[in-house]
Image (cartoon, rainbow, N blue to C red; front, side):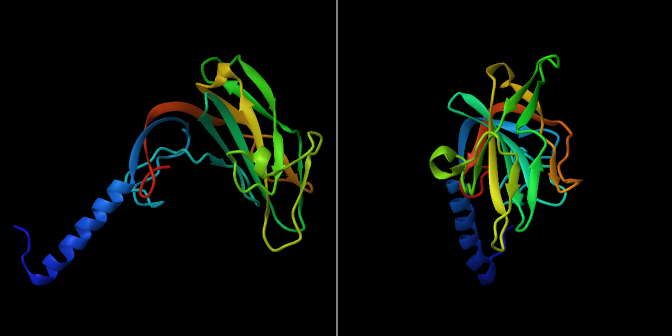
Length: 203
């Protein structure tokens, strides 16, 4: 049976209280989200989460500088995000300012979607209000003069016929003559289910 030693009893109640608080702060919410299905599930207790989580963090595609591609679904439409961090004294060139999307339901349905880029963007909920918009003609992204990378955020809205799932082919990105991005198509599938949010959750 359970230990009745004073030390065991002393630790039992704080531990139970900690688990109770953690569980209470982890609120299950039914939501729509995209899984980066070619990545493994996130094991429990790896990012502060209490339970295994679906891979909703997108894909990393940069070889020498951080570049990531992610997708989300909110307010009835889907968006794809391209995050690029440019190191100081570097200047990256995008081969194109578009994403290539291919439907998972019908591989014959493909389209190129323009990216709208923002600079110095710390959040993506409303970049038009909080970030510096770049010209649609700009394909060169320069790092700042300080010690930290400069963040650029590209956003493309997904057509309604592709929202259930799609492959994203990101643009090629070059640092001088060196290509630093992968052109491998990235698979996103829409899911509708319960995800836990808050401390100990998946979102």
